[in-house]
Length: 151
Image (cartoon, rainbow, N blue to C red):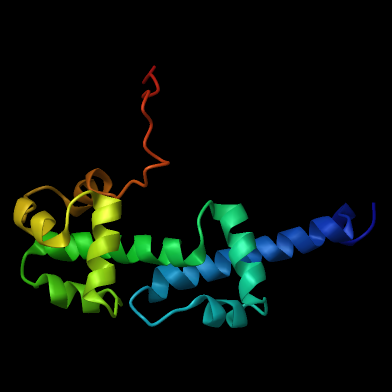
């Protein structure tokens, strides 16, 4: 074995790539409401957009854009539960520039359109931590048809 700390050069590169992918994911989590695109994210970590997309999908199971939209929808759900903003205001607050795209992605992830979600989820008296966990969007591939036993 060669390289630093007994790692091969390939292993060391893989660890550096994982660190860069974590920086991209953290940036998305922090700046989800800003205009972000794969090219800008890739430039921020000195990767090509294609390489970033492939590596991000391999590491996290979804594309950077899909991850970004999931973060935006999670935040939108919280804002819609508050009930003091319209669907359009929520759309733009979370960084979406198209109400149609926002509504489509929201419906895909949550199962109902944002207007229905807003109506059905009036402000609750549950602590926000519990509300976030219970109402977290679940992608179809994450849902299990045969729940695992609790024991």
